[in-house]
Structures are given as C-alpha cells and as structure tokens.
Length: 447
Image (tube, rainbow, N blue to C red; front, side, top):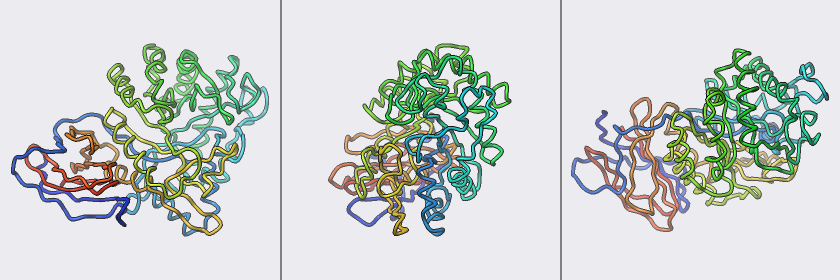
C-alpha cells in the first residue's frame, strides 16, 4: 500500500469565492488520535465506471445558439480532462424525449416492420455534432448509454408517443431490431454506444414521451427480444440496463428479471433516478440480493425551472452522489449538460435546471453550484477507481473515498450545516487536522 504523507485540498464554499479552488496542502503526521473521518485504502469495494451528464436535443440546440468561444467553453468545462470535469460516462435519448423540440422517431412510417425508413437524420442536425465534439475534447470515446422515452407512435397501443401507452405485442421484435439499428447507425457516425436502458421511467404515464412496462413485460422483452437481437447482430457487448426509474420501487421492479436466468444473462444491471423518495437503502438491498448486478444512477436534476444561483442545488447533488456511491453505485449521470435560462427548451414546458445555464441572447454562461459540486467527484474520482473504507463519526459531515488507478486517494467531504466544522482525517498510519466551511464541499487528494 502507498504510504500517504500529504493531501492536496480543493474547496467550493457558498460564503467565499472558492470554486474547486486549491487550498494549503495537508501534511500527515503519525500521532495516533481519534479520526472524525477514517479511511483505509486496503479495504476496497465497487469499481467506478465514471461520471457525466446527458446529451439531449435541448442541450445541443442551446449549444448551437452560443458563439464559438462559449460553445467550446461548455464542452471543455464538461469533458476536458485537465481544464474541466473530465466526464466519461454519459446518456442520450433514442427518439425524442421531453427535452427535445418536439416528438420525433427514427422511423415514422406505419407498419414498417422491416425498418426500411429508419434514419437518424434528425440527430445529425444538433445532437450528434455535440456528442462528436465532446469526444474530440475528451480525447477518447465516451461510455455512452441511450434510453428510449417512447417507441414510434405506430408501435404503441395508444397511437401516440406522449401520455404513456404500451408497446404493441406484434411490434416487440421490430422494436428490439430498432435498438440494433440505432447502435449500428451511431457507430457509422463515429459514436459507440456502450449501453442501452430498456425504457426511461417505465411506470410513468407522462404528458411527454412515455411508455409503460410491467416488471414482467420488461423481463420478457429483454429475454425474448432485445437480448437476442443484440446478440444476433454481434452487439452482445452492449450493456442492457433495466428499470431506469426511481429508487423507491427498484427492489420490487428488478426482482422478476434478475431472478430469471434466461433474462438475467443479458442484463448488466439496473439504473435509477432520484425523484420521489430518497430510499438509498434500497440500492444497498439490490446489491445485497443480487451482488453480481451493477447499479447506475442514470438521471437526476432539479425540477421546476432553472433555479438560477440557488446553492441548494449543489448540496442536493453531493448528498445524493455520496450516499449512492456508499451504497454500491458504480456511476452517476446528471441530466441535461446545458440548458437555456428558462430551463429548456422543452416541448411540453417541463423546465428544469442544469449545471450550466446559457443566456443565448447575451451569449453568456451561468455556472451553477451543481456544476462545482459535481466536479468534486468527477475530477478526482476517475474511471477504474475503487471505493474504499470511509467512516465518519459525526452527523454533520458526509464523506466517501476512492483509490484511483494511479494509487492516489480522493476523499470527498460535505458540510451542509451553517457552521464551520473542524475535523481530523485519519488513515491507519497517520492523519491531519482540517476544517471545512459552512455550506461547502472539499476534496482531498492523498499522495
């Protein structure tokens, strides 16, 4: 084990100008004392896939409305490994979602079971160029997973993409091959699809693009259609993620698929969101019951408008990330990477916040607290990092810790109280005293 002797310290605080700002280095000493935060890098848990956000048509169109300097600035802020967050795991949508300019599908020809009219031309206008530019800045392919909000209207029992409805039984095979065509067409555009979720929020009948599956219907679609279709096409490496909805119902929802050997062999893991109840313990229950399945946070955002300048956004993100990671989550993906100052565009008025808001009329960027709080994780906990033992003794401090592939250790400490907190950071062989201001977050990088 590396003998850690010091820690670089980075701080973001509400009541100070610090934003991911370097602080004086901590020097460890060998004096034995009680640690408020105890870390043991020899005790290791899950491996991290990455952190990131979602490419949506709304984000891509917003980006196109900015001047070239700020377009590049947004992408570097998110994807540059040295100047930005170094995002590596991201999401996008198959067909339209609420954060698109309107309903659309890649094949809108009724009865086209052979998918002869399938085309991703709509995505080539804004969405794909944004993804391609992000890959250029990242310097490597991203782990990109894609989620459908709805099949084409003609494949559904309701004949429309919005307001729920179900996939018609006679369209299941065509819908599975639709996923295959999507992966293939994106590959031709130079964008590899790392994984797919079966359905975004399969229990939600929304006023926007949505489709309902029971747990058994999701299981059967994976087992009998989607899994075999990807395998036949030589795409068995594409990860299949089920659920992709809230933590509250995850245990009951994944059970039929995870307990079915024929379905489970195709399934990488379960995705989840943060809306409704917190229920972090349900993520732990899924891990404890099915330890060979992965857990991935696939979407979260602040609902109800842009919330410009609100500090609570960042704290909500950090609290969720720490607790999700400490309950075996392997990656954390925010929702829209960038939106305009209305919290859109959104074709049904479901406006939300994003870590970067863009005033497209003034060509200005507004970085929100959530942007900086996300950076305390994504910049310092890199893909391939392993979670390590990290225990706190106090309710007013929240923490998680990871050892990176280069043996550096990142310890993230969150203070959501209105008081500065003095604490000691301890390892088995030494430690140091530190402090964290009110309403702030710190990352300590041990070397």
